Image 1 (tube, rainbow, N blue to C red):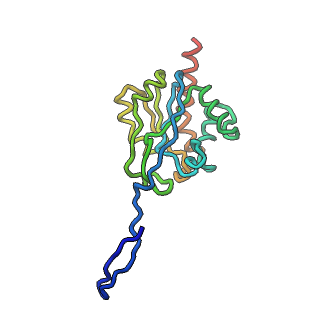
Image 2 (image 1 turned 60 degrees about the vertical axis):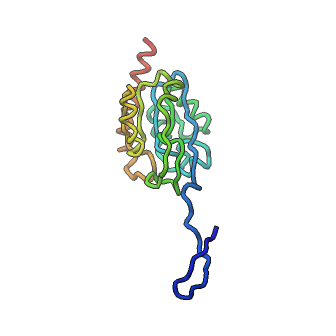
Image 3 (image 1 turned 90 degrees about the vertical axis):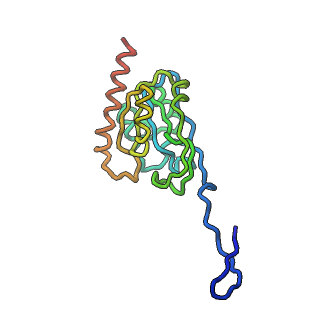
Length: 192
């Protein structure tokens, strides 16, 4: 849409482009991946453009999330079709969601998120009452950590799996291994 502006020199009206309204770029996130028996919830910030376009969590081919999960659960989830990946997560009682369920953002960077709407902790408590550990994938997601801790959950801030966070895979995996340790302990509790 163009608006009229008056040229200070000639006094003649000239058309100029209005600045794009970021509210027109409002985006909805992906639905949570939760089951009644979910024990670990991994929260990201908000899906990137590749994930939104594919309607899949962590769809960017350089994101380390699926290779990290593959190492944690000792299963080749990174090469599976998306539905099979989610099935593997559910089998290991892992859920996914984001701290923001909607926002305005140009591009995929967390720093561009504006007018964000947070997901409701009570929604998780109703859908997945057995969640005991909430993990935060990256610093932006970890801003929600105090609210989840105050709601009674154990919490764990982890390095981002995003390709924008350029730490080596091995360094990220070393810190994410704490999730695997929790899962192993939870499996023992279930078996006993």
